[in-house]
Length: 84
Ligand SMILES: [Zn+2]
Image 1 (cartoon, rainbow, N blue to C red):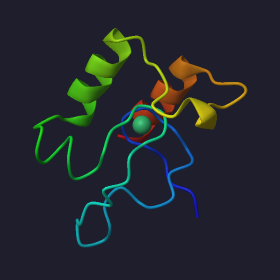
Image 2 (cartoon, rainbow, N blue to C red):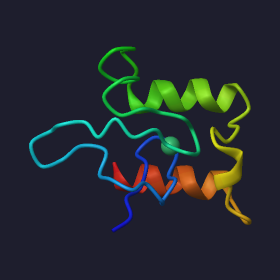
Image 3 (cartoon, rainbow, N blue to C red):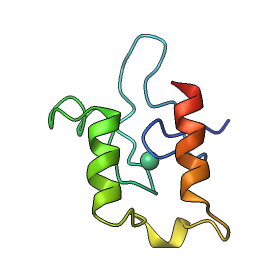
Image 4 (spheres, rainbow, N blue to C red):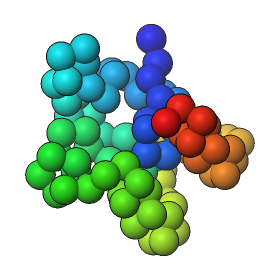
């Protein structure tokens, strides 16, 4: 089962960012680099503030090798907005 990153819309997370009890996965998104349970809890970011920081830094892939062949950033972010 694949999960969608609530920050950038990356759709290949291996675990749900938060489980049914609200426990963080501590998985790092291959696209935006957000670590669930770290960047939010410890760094104080919201998904939106992290997304803005990431996009203003060029929206680069955290793991370049995971980059989709065709990636529409705006489409991904729109997907996120439609989920929120
Ligand atoms: Zn992400």
